[in-house]
Amino acid sequence: MQVNAMGKLCPEPVIMTKAEIEKGATELEILVDNDIAVSNVTRLLEGKGFSVELTRSGNERKLTAKKTASGEAAAPSKHNELLAILIAHDVLGGNDKELGEVLMKAFLGCISKLSRQPAVMAFMNEGVKLVLPESSACEYIKELEKNGTKILVCGTCTNHFDITSKIAVGTVSNMFEIMEMITGADNTLIF
Image: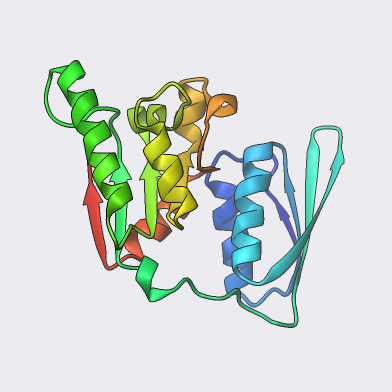
């Protein structure tokens, strides 16, 4: 089965691929034209138990995927399924940017020290600026990732701010994957 997602914007390639998997496809060829789509579709496929090979020809990237004998990838442990956090701002609170930056750093620092850390943290809109190396909170986000929290960064947002190549932590993701992770958690906090 071939999925032609050439020219499709995030998260359409992921949605198209997922639809074919849900129909029972065990072998797929997915055509995309950008590296963010390659990364997002590859994560989806590997998470669904597929092996993936990438070939490039000009602007075209072809992912060849085949369901492995072991089937679905292992589910994450319950320890990390409890909490999801969506951060859409680079500050916490009201109009005082300086105070908001201090509060966001303290907030992320506290989360990184909790005994039960979130399963996923997603960064969107201005929140993506927190994963830049110059962000005062970046080290805490790196610590969360090191401790097992999945860090997802909105690719549409990093493209908008022209910072995709500069992110220091996390995986450039898409709205579909972020929503799937957020809605799959037992509890979600939004900031």
